[in-house]
Image 1 (tube, rainbow, N blue to C red):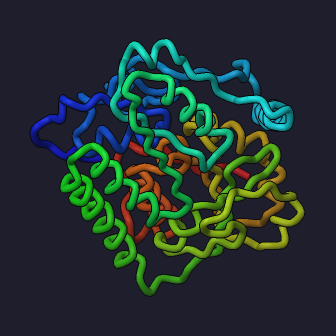
Image 2 (tube, rainbow, N blue to C red):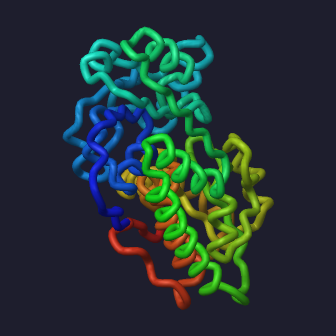
Amino acid sequence: MPLLRGCHIQTMRIASLVPSSTEMLFAIGLGESVVGVTHECDWPAAARELPHLTATVLPEGLNAGEIDAAVKQVVGESRALYSLDEARLAELAPDLIVTQAVCDVCAVSYEDVVAVAARLPGPPRVLQQDPSSLPEVLEDVERLGDAAGIGERGRTLRGELEARLDAVRTAVAGAKRPRVVALEWLDPPFVGGHWLPEMVEIAGGVDVAGTAGAKSPEVEWEALEKLEPDVVVAMPCGWYLEDSLEQATEQRERLRALGAERVFAVDAASTYSRPGPRLVEGTELLAHLLHPERVEPPAGIGFAPVAV
């Protein structure tokens, strides 16, 4: 993903509490204005060196099933999955805090962020980014640019991203559309919602499991078997290729029962889980998986066939 160049906006100090927003900020040339990020912000590489403002309450080393159980327990007890370092945030003195409320298990509670921001000097502005569709993700690029006073850069980046999506649509036009199941988790199975069905459609497929714009639902494996997919893509939320492949391998028999001709594991954290600019790479990768003769894979994005 090329970053937009130009004069840096150094007068604004920005705290990003969502990995996708961190990626957006760097993509529109605001990397030097970011003063703090989450413990999960690892793209681009420069973001890893910034102060961490969050931590998770979940212990390390849990497998997929244990993570699901732990998350359900914490949420069921109305406890927060993430903590926010208010003292560190105050020291960094941001003018703008970027956060979200769309996913209860993806970031610090929006209400907690607003409450903390109100206690800080200023207080800083809180920008909420809650896209549930691909067009809304692109709109957020503009909104973030406007909030930082560089609206033109946001509009330029949005135009570049839309042009790439149009190129994918053109490349797969007229091709037979395979039936696709996108799995956002495998133990237990969740099917992709939000922007994922739109990405599948642009890539030249038909998502037979998820609903565009809706939350990703938990389903039964037996229900997925009835969908008769041609392609299954394992994209466990927040996991990179190695762990996605491991999770898919552990569920090999379940995946085999779906009867798909092709099954893939992908780098979900980089290209599907985070509603940022790299969803475009994710769409390009989907187009390659569905129509390899028409679309080349994007550089640097991991994927692998799963032997079922």
